[in-house]
Length: 265
Image (tube, rainbow, N blue to C red; front, side):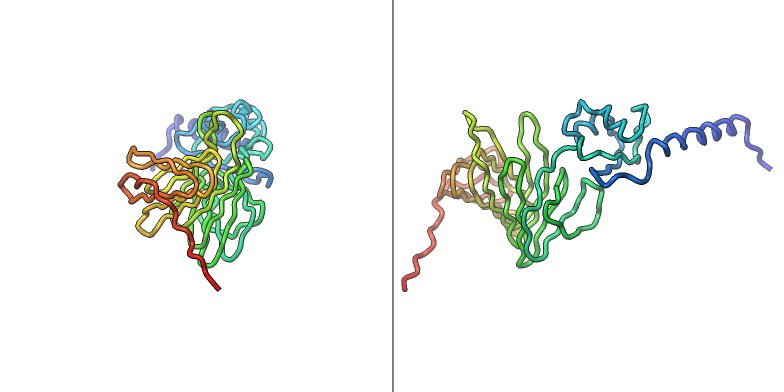
């Protein structure tokens, strides 16, 4: 019969002493205030703080909230609670819903779609979609509105940094954006909308973007200006103009948005 060596016994003893420490530092029950994340392979305290904290310099408060004394004890698979007081503010909040709408809260490691409640915050990598005859309205931190038409799907793609604003990915469907006007001179980019075929940069405007079944993109500017880029080509749309971007090709030359025909009595 095989008998374990003394060295193996010693290793097992050390492990038994180690894991209770992790258990005490990483409880399975967390307060409902804030979000719970799972540490991924390659993540460090620094990257976690930059990704999830409103002020990355408050990493010590994050450790304290999770009763962790040693940053080296943050390991892949471990769950961390990010209190609402420390966490980033939502990229967008649910302002209005109608019909069958759903959200996928990837920021909370959820894998199934669920019905949203008014005021629900959406964070990095969270998704929202509408189904037939449904509608969803999102409000951004700066007061801007995103209106998602039926059969549409949008992803919170990137959070705001010092040099770039929040960005969203419209995977399919139609989205109307009413962006708060920036008062600074020169105006700063306040919003970036990406599609599988193009990117729209906005400094305060109202526009409509549509992605068809072939992932081609149409962008129409209703007020202000919007820059649309694809394949290293950028066109500027003024109010009343639109462009079409076939996937894999540059935007077309801006053209006037056709006016609706007048209906005479």
